[in-house]
Image (cartoon, rainbow, N blue to C red; front, side, top):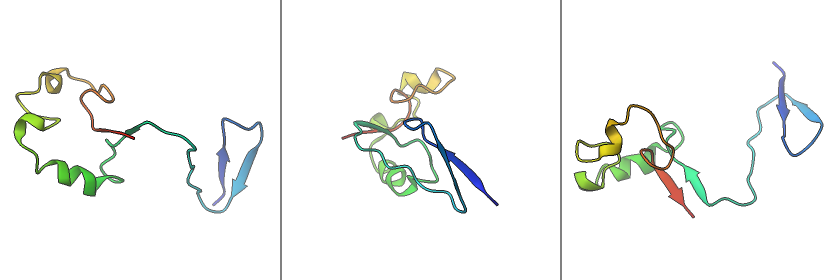
Length: 78
């Protein structure tokens, strides 16, 4: 199966047999809400007290009803 990979920084797209990961050159806020990629880190956060938890009854942002990246999801600041 052929997968087309397009890069927003270039005008041409590449064709490859396997999917390549994109590497960023600079990043400050990294979204960690993907449980498949960040399961180890998210598991470590469960060790924190409830008032530090992202999803808890005491956190009013848990009751908003939709995702606000960095507010009611986990984000890493580098």
